[in-house]
Image 1 (cartoon, one colour):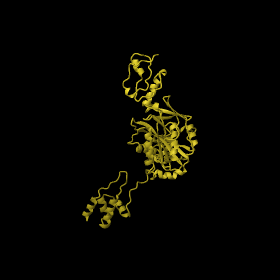
Image 2: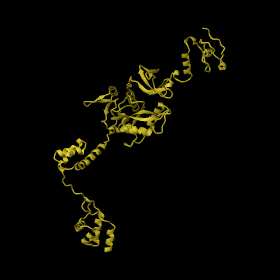
Image 3: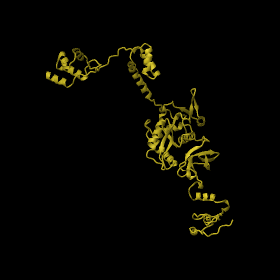
Image 4: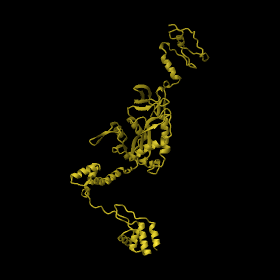
Length: 462
């Protein structure tokens, strides 16, 4: 019997207790004690000797009907006990600074150590940080609120990568988003992107939530928001109420922040674009075929399906004309020497490909300016997806003919039908023979004779 008992106790191992705790019996040892006493009738003294426990501890284990885990005894009073309420109330006001609290307690007669104050403040500070990191999700009803923000991304074109700005408007209920890539974040692009979003959704929500860019507000004064006057007029014109996030709390508009990340992580990777027109075509297709029909991670529904509940309660905008600004619109000249305005495209001199220009709208006329100089002027085209191209803007034969016509003196210009191939003016050859007068232009030269000009032709007398 004793052999079996010794073998059984040898498999459990010595008792382990922390230095600051009173001796305790772990559950497996407690069960072994009771088994030996109940089944083998091992006396208390023998059990105490085998397990190296006090007899009182053994009797307690045999007396308890169930094993109880160790519980730390309630802390006794310390020097901080009388100051506990003061510390809990004061700590948030001094940003949980144990040093400041220790200084103030010393003035109140505290004679304890600084380390004791630090140990008291540490869990209070940890609880405060945890509360700061907690975000309460704010859901809005259909048609209640939209969130708007900008993002910056490097977009790859065939010529070279460019840093562009993406405007994102996310409907709060359905999570359906609108994305518009712009060259800058200036006010004209900002308001134009709003109107494109209104057109895309067929209306807008009653509230719009923004960060605090200069295009929306210009700060606060005596607790009152100083709105950008043009933006405020725009909001009143369309009938929505602008709201601002709390400062330095970007997570307040987490829905649109997620939209910006989704654009950068899902649309841009692996794509290369020919020009701005190609970029916007691909973006529109991506919104319709991917972004709108994905299963959203928060709602677990497709945004386009939830939009069916939200669209009927949006404020309609179809019958209202556009809010036009007279401020210039910034554009980048595409590879086909065209700039896009309201889906219509207008030509500029081809030498400006890749250069920034400004488009000014005045009384139905578009004036395109580069570095302060007027480079093109077009009547504004009505409708959508129209082209307005002037021949002299291109690099082809028509442009060379125009340059030649301007380089010839007015007195020597004569009406002539266009030759079948490009032929130099005979004045060049007369000048080579020593005649400084301008010769008459060649008229109706035969194509087969174009390659053998007559250098002995007499010059026109002065």
